[in-house]
Image (cartoon, rainbow, N blue to C red; front, side, top):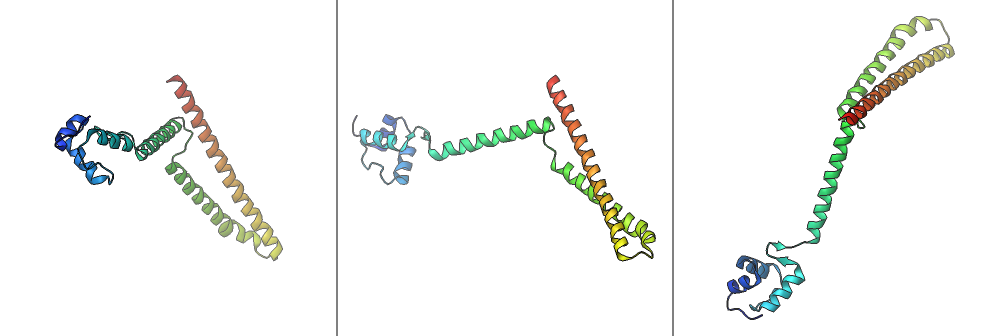
Length: 167
């Protein structure tokens, strides 16, 4: 190994581009000043540099690991959706909207239409009892609607699992 007269000759000997040599001199404070091949080989090995810049930097490896983890997670989500293990957020939002409308309707029906004639002339304790009974009916109605939806989702899951087995 020898000393070269130009950075181009050094680059040729190191099998890198002359631009790489200039860039490394600019980017690294400890880059050799002379065109001595042995010094440059030590420098390249010390920093993990090569023909295409950094061979493997720690940050690049971390990014690749993060990318792979993200891709695996996306694939898991796609599989779970295909197997109907995940319920799309839009479906949940639509169901909650349906349930809220149903509860509102049941409350208005009971408290504004059914209860007033029943409570006319009753004392406060009887009115409270009837109001609680109606509130309980609304809650039971919500619970039944939720159970029906869960049953529907379980049937979808089973159908999707069966379809996945046959595919």
